[in-house]
Length: 489
Figure 1 (tube, one colour):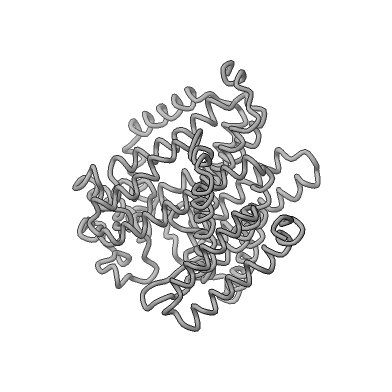
Figure 2 (tube, helix red, strand yellow):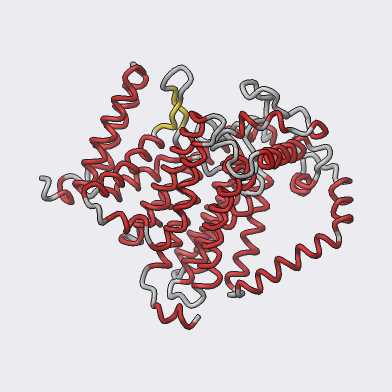
């Protein structure tokens, strides 16, 4: 039987064996939490070894993509929770990488070489930040989470997409199906609450703990399917993809996240630039001109923001007013609190610019650094007693990294993102699969913009979409590439 996994095992593994094992762990967790961790560890190791021996990695990843949208917080001990079954499946996937390298040491370069080497500095930053952390145990936990997500969703997926290029679309379709069910469930709940926009924060629970995470996920999916529909060759596929794009655009508006809505505008702009094949140097010049004009007209911009009195969180607010409220930095508590978090993050950076406070520490360390003039009803004074509708951390991926890991952390992140920009705008204009590259990067651009206002890379559901999209971009770039085209570009 072990010599014919295609016939005997691969057919039943993803639908019967693994779900049954996961359900067994779930039952043990509910029945007796005392033995959950050792039993889960044994289960994960045994399952990972079986997957490697029978070469069932693709089936595991498909199952992971399908169930990620349905992950929910499950108490393990009195104060400990896991995201079930997401974190369990992610842990199994990470262990398969470890086992593969142990059994085949030469596989190390395959997993960590070529384009992926630009992600290694960011990987190393997390354990390094733990050494200088003000809360080492917290930083160790977050370092493990972030490293695992990057390993599984970037390193493993990029490697396996290079061998099985169709797997990416299969995983995106499975995730989209699961996410669609969550959106339909949330729509029903929204209807029950009388379509009151104030209720959108909680209608996606227990699967998506916050509406902003839902909005970010919906925007990257909507952008991907819209961009894919333009490049589809068959009319029927073009129609299906466009319909998926429209549905997830609806999800963006259902999530009632201004940053997610504006990220779709950013996607449209990036998509246009990519389709026009604008050279990187012209893009740099355009960005510089925009900065210069911002400086020249800074007073007019300030007045525009100061006199903006639109409020986002009120019943029956019109969409135009809701979007305009993103510029209200005086009376909209959500915006004022976001400025407060940014201010605190930057002050944290100025106190510890080289090391930061350690991964995961912002939510505990930022409180003394808040600006008194920016305090409001959403301001947190006790991390264990958070006001209603407040929460989150720095509300900016870039400021969060800067405050927690200092200059080295931000430099490592910008090195990685800058490399992607270089690949897309400079190295791949003549790539034979240019269409696939710009589709994946255009989808990524939604979060490159959104990351100025929120931070979700330590959330399993969104980490899969972001790092997985990047894994696909890099795998396509490296596959079937004629080096002479690179020299002539």
